[in-house]
Length: 382
Image (cartoon, rainbow, N blue to C red; front, side, top):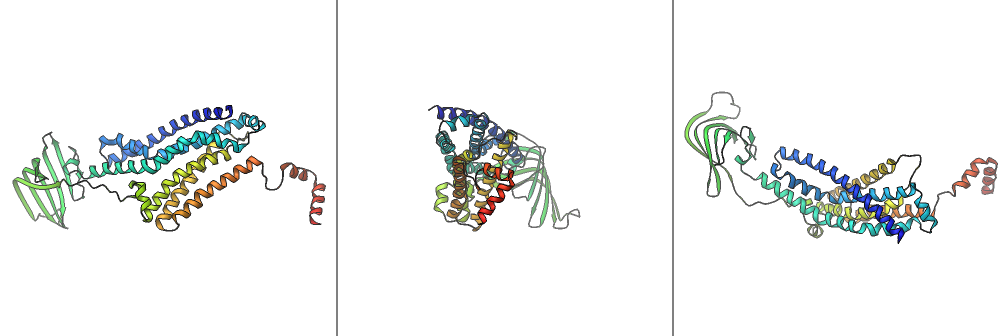
């Protein structure tokens, strides 16, 4: 009982501290990325915090997995460094006996990782895509900020409004458009937005319109007209159709029922996150050690390297399935089953004290006594 409780308490402290640090780092990265996307017009600037929340939820499996891996390796390494492992080994506890307490501590975290990767990840991506599509489908004039040139959604028009009011009206309006090789520049003193048959209509007052043909810009305009009132349709309100064809936003059950390769690749990636978290528990038990001659950060560097290598292999496997280089079941068995097997073999080697060529003392004695080494070689040859 003391054995398990002491390990769980230290694991909880280490896991909590690591989780706070990683969440802070991820939030900073997501904030910078989201602000950049909002400045390019991908999201509504007012929805930045909501987009950040969805993005953080989508990265929750990775954050929890890395936090759990670092906490376990650092806890076991600390026990080696302070000679607590020696006490437990002398008491009859082998290295493999640490798997039980580690999994009893980690199973709620592993469950959250599985739920997050299989259900929360596609849900957060779907919500983000809906927000992005809703913002991109707004009318052209909704994109315009007073005093700034703004391109339309199709790239064929450029708007400028000097100032506007809350009544969908503006003044000093400039519109440059291209349609079938013909260029036009329209200016007006005032304008307003009206709604006719469910469509948005721009009504300009007291203005001028110039039309050019392709390659004739800067020459005499083909047509120059003044108007008192000019009406143009600028958009319509259609039903919002989110892009659910992207595999990352498709529900997991739909991925499992599909035979499309990109869907199977996404499914392998989601299952890989859950399986990798289990493998990292075994890997942490096998890799935890301490080297008195190296710094305390040596284990952390190795942990980050192992995590990045495994994560890149999962991403690479997803691409291989998507292009048809490998089968879905083959990848799961080869990658995650292979990592689990190697981790168990390494754990067994350390638990049972396996060596490749005998004990180190035996070989050290042979190197220190050349004559004994020569006699041993002659006996082996005979």
